[in-house]
Length: 347
Length: 127
Image (cartoon, rainbow over all chains, first blue to last red; front, side, top):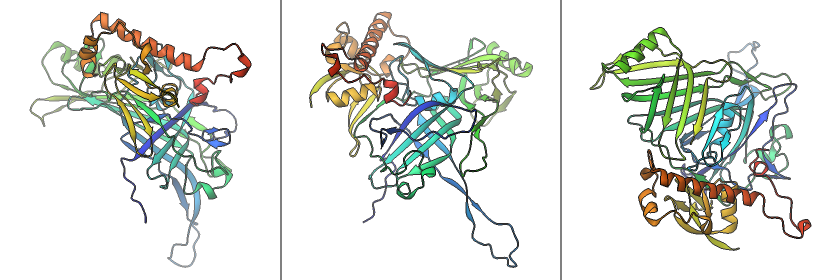
């Protein structure tokens, strides 16, 4: 009898992130192994809310005329995987220990965190590229299990503010392919990413996940050193500008390409007649680059401080749909002078 | 398989002891204690980054009243009394020291009998 697969019965394990060479011919990183056995043997579990690991395989249609209007069968085309992992924000809960989402953050910022033992972890930008692997395990174990090989984060979106009970993050990215338990036994070596001839791994028998979810409506926002008590909601989008190049000689994407990063912030404030609100209007109109500090949550060990530098605010759109006027500042871009447009500290 | 008592120094932690059934030990309160298999606890601390320390390493300076007052994450929101912050850092330092001791166990007299320590970065796939 077939088993239905319940959506709650799924765990995610993250591996890495490891530096990826962008010079020369790319040998895509393999999925993690422990000797001759696929990992995981131990857990790197991470709680999440939604996960999308879609295999994308184009269908190539021959364009030549056939003398008929009937479409002929196509053939398999290039492969890729545009993935997404959504989660509640959660630090470890102890200062100086990276969160469970660390591999995603390392790939996002392009460098491992700087750890101040017992105090904080800080992610700062570099131009390096880091890839991660991820595995989803569903119950029952006979369900199709999926592993994401050589994943790079292309963007992350953070949401918080009044009315947002839990601050959240959504990570999107690219990867050459998804290896799964249904197709691995018959997959060719080039399609197995290091697991060719191996049995698909079993889920670790135990694991740990850490940190309380960050309360989305608690925190602080400082613009140009000024606290905005009338801040309402915010969304920060960090786009890494990374993609996989098309390659001759393979079904899979080649050496990653990275253009400029695009870090933007949207925010809304309750419209007021005070001097700080007036100052924000002026900053937006003059396009004055300012530092914006977003703090999500305020529990020691699980306080996220995201700093964006050189932010040039969009002019506000005044919204009268609610009981109070709200000024919405749309995509406002961060800028800098070399890997300094953004950083994240969890303390 | 030996078991010991461990105490929690973080904000929240689920140690799933059987991933097939989802059975877990849920730590919700600072200072909360639970008896865990030492093997599972070791893996949870080293690879799962769980914020637990052997009970004897939990700072004795933290009082029962402080545990009652600051046990939940909610109760630790915002500025905390400096006296408790010092103790919180002491607990975190105990965890850091415990993690380090698991990474680099003391070398016994017969060093050749000890397996080469494996860096956590290697085990976590970060090497």
